Length: 147
Image (cartoon, rainbow, N blue to C red; front, side, top):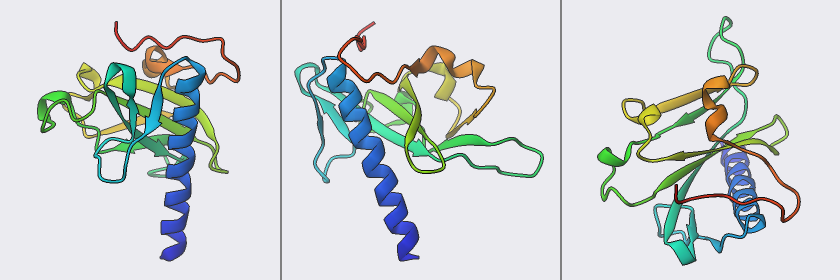
């Protein structure tokens, strides 16, 4: 059991540190939150709070293809207080624990209004393309948090 906890902590650390790095590459003043906060990342100059969700590819049944599963995704109207965090960054990890894909979803998006889970297929995630962020390796992008 302790091996599973170690693996979970390792994946969480990779997901959060990758998210902070990607935000900084986009020019954001992003910092990791303290352990007492309910969100994971704060963009200080804009007071935007972000919750990180991560998943390795899983298969729920023999019929269903591999997908990333993100649980406990809650719409803003059901959060208390409702501005506890403003965005989810969903981190699709590969089998080795590295980040393959990133999606930015606002807590007031209709896609999460009646759902508590989001499943994104590895190969057919077209419904989520508008939320997907490019993973950048240099300071050449701009992430627009305020639409």
